[in-house]
Amino acid sequence: MKDRRALVTGAAAGLGAGIAATLACEGSFARIALTYRTTPPDATLAAIAGAGADAVAARVDFLDGPVEVERALDALVRESGPFDTLVHCVGPLTVKRFERLTIEDYREMFDGNVRSAVQAARAVLPAMREARFGRIVLFGMNGSSETRPHRGFTLHQAAKSAVTAFARGLAVEEARHGITINVIEPGDIREKSLTRAAALERAAPNPRGRPGSFEDVAEVVAFLVAPERDFMTGAVLAVTGGLSEADERNATPP
Image (cartoon, rainbow, N blue to C red):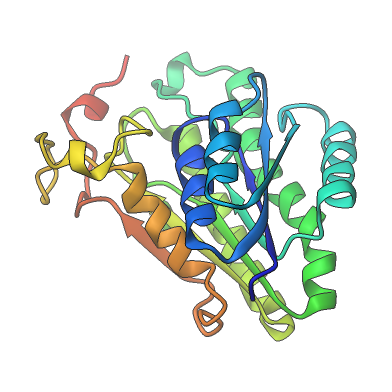
């Protein structure tokens, strides 16, 4: 499959940008479309084009109302799809004690993480079903598949656990169409654009002893979206350096 098309959401910077560029370098994708909220991802588009793939970007603010988001995604699919791969990197994070959280924080956590994943999947699934092939990767957080608690992550943890449950249920329903849906749980990746080479020069409070890099995550994404990975679905993969508990910084949030 050398004419594949991928949609990577939230790819203006951070993990999304690194994942999009990595997929382009894999050589299987003829087109990679990106979504951004405010700043056009010019550097990511240049990296994709430099790897030999067609690169396009569209503004989609997943915190807009459901109708606006649906219209924006439908236009992107119509103009740049159909997509056989979705990597949904959108997922705002708020770290606060519950007593300081607001209803607006609740809306941002659940609309930005859960509703965004649902709407992104709805936009790409019809074409995947018709082609009888698709790859979807969503993102949880460390411990979301077990609802493992961390101080200060009350709403974020709840939202990411909902994303994980959604993905695993959807995986069961869509498997008969040749579509896989898997979840990555990243952890201890503070600098989202950090390379592995730079990470190896630093220390971090996890069993591996170094911080995570965008390459650590991007290479797992590339593994999951490969055509031959058709028997792996509903899986949750931790990319955490072995971290299982909140570190000292996250244990005492503001």
